[in-house]
Length: 452
Ligand SMILES: Nc1nc2c(ncn2[C@@H]2O[C@H](COP(=O)(O)OP(=O)(O)OP(=O)(O)O)[C@@H](O)[C@H]2O)c(=O)[nH]1
Ligand SMILES: [Mg+2]
Image (cartoon, rainbow, N blue to C red):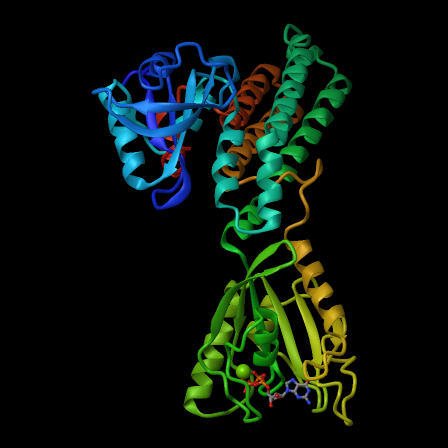
């Protein structure tokens, strides 16, 4: 495979559709315009109508095509996008013809890989293209868009340049004999380094958010039997999925649905009510609820406000819920003997509602969204969301920088400290991408779809 060969792939899913787009990137593009489309001098980035003729001069379809010069294309190479009628047979014929004319079928993510290799984008931006395509919620789209804009790359380069400045400062002291080195003089550089370490650590803290954005926030509805958990589940899902009945212990197996709540994708789960005793099947249901609570990201704790307050929440649940990730929903306030449960988990936010009459529901929805907002805050300059690969490199960089800091403060060894800082800078470099790490690049781009 040569880096200069021309590649071809369908850029739209194969199937009947209004239009289908075939994409070509590489040096053959100008010649393809001339030979297959009979337009020897296409106006770049302007759509034109032409007949696509195969290598045997047979008309395949009337198409709209756009030619991009290398300086203004996605890949940084001459490129061509051919939009035909959306018949998979036409797409197949066009691709086969382009292969006959010297193109090669593209590998997954190869267009974006070329964009990265030609310096059109850094690695964080290339990754965000895949994240953007896979995003399943408004917040996931927003995060991917910001990353595509290059905010993370910018932050990483800023950290690298400040570390280089720090190295330059330290080098001024390198010729001092150790015993003559004034400890006072090291205070400035060492506190600058400590600040940089804190920034590197802070940046990696958002890695959990990326996972939540991809998998969805797991929200567990728990509470006493018959409190209205399944009623709430149905309401939030917008359909009558779970059986609701006045009989206590109705739900045993858990149910789960992927739903949107505000800008978030949520895996909402309805579970068996928690109680002492009960039948064998009920006990098995409760065990399952407790297992799920270990994995859940947040909780809606539903209580029947017309019944006495529960005495405790049980050990397992108590370990997994806290005031940040759990809302107490006091349901059935329409009933005459409804009362407040102020002393039950008093530090948690309590909301009073009636699923039956709808009272308090708007408030409840807002509180649920706010709780999720805390799990995945909106991306900002202060909170750039990083993925697991970025976090791993940030951790490596942080370790080198911590060692550099120790060497500087404890051993007063500037030379060794400088070496550790260089390793820290290199680890940051891996985030925005080095072009010589073929293995890593292959792994990363193989997760893309073909044609991207
Ligand atoms: N009065 C009143 N009844 C409600 C309210 N919400 C739910 N119910 C009723 O309470 C009963 C139990 O509701 P479910 O949603 O099945 O309760 P659950 O918590 O899922 O019950 P289990 O699965 O048995 O643990 C049903 O008869 C519901 O119609 C409410 O706000 N007010
Ligand atoms: Mg139920």
